[in-house]
Image (cartoon, rainbow, N blue to C red; front, side):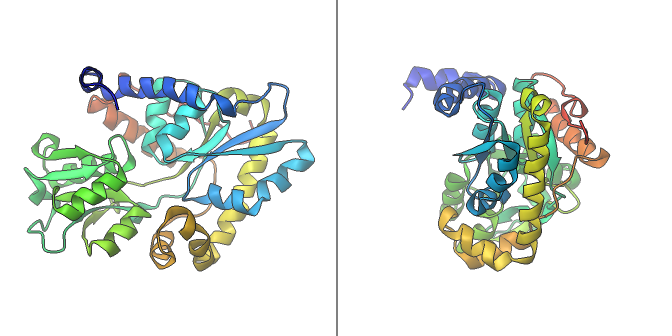
Length: 326
């Protein structure tokens, strides 16, 4: 555990500085994943929930890349931010994350490239309140505490929900907690609301009999992005295309086999299959290149976080997007 002095230093630092510190740590932590420069390999970072873990389980990517002379290595990450730290550090070549983590990764380095995305899934994130809470609308959150993961998709959801309700951002209290800690605080009644995404959203609805104050519908797109490194994209375009084709095949299977997907993921994420089925029904499917709408939506996220002082500079999302056929 950091010393008291170290904790004070981290407290004084802004979110962006902390991100840089974590990036340096990630470089050391994930250096074991690096391979020789002359090896023909793609190093994929994945999380326990999502398309990539299904891709790994079925071995489809290995089948797709073997004719091209490439092998695949896999590295598991607990969430999007550390995965993208490893990507920026050159420890992996490909991975996926939601809307917000790539924003901070792009602010930290110009190495990141958006190569594809899934369609919006706004029902896959929400702001929850206890079922007997007096809070009946977002406007009722004035002076109350919302638990959320800082710099995540739901951070943007909270900002947009407050804007729509006409409630200034500084008129609520934010408790920045990881999903497990936020869920515990919500269950104890230590916070008034919880902004969270699936599958934790579906689990929270079931475990705490929580009431949904608002979902992302009409507020945020909640996209999933596939990302790589600029150097890897430039040199291994065929591999990126083959990887996206494999993801598209898994997507098509998952869309029509929700129950089978839930059973496969349940032991990995520690959430019962029936609850995962609820989450999967709110997920979107259909990997595709970023279109103008996706770029504009992501630019809006970046501009919002810059306005809030969480980014040190404005970002140009379009400049980090891989164009089809390149």
